[in-house]
Length: 146
Image 1 (cartoon, helix red, strand yellow):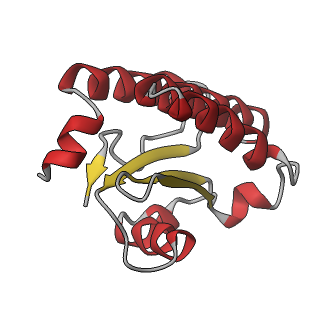
Image 2: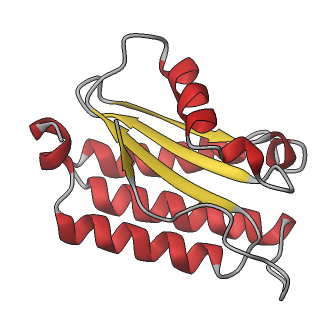
């Protein structure tokens, strides 16, 4: 793994974020993933869409996957929600979540920003895609790196 990406989060911080994903997904049938890479040579939104498909997030039954994509050196990130989510959430939802993450990132609090973003996404998913007994965890919770 690249040293820039390694320095972005410690192993302990990654574990705390994975736990936040697990907690958020306990309340919803939605799926949340985080992908971190050093840089992207294409538009960040386009890259987030590529990663979304690469991680097979477009295969969830209810189209309710959310990807938080971070390009460390580019100092940028995207929250990418699948069609099922974007059809039901308020247009400003991702903007408010992005603002919260960004305010933490500007202070160098990357773990806190990602945890807060995950928990906010989970809350919104819970409102529109509540968990029920038949739900299975369709995607892994770990953080992926590029």
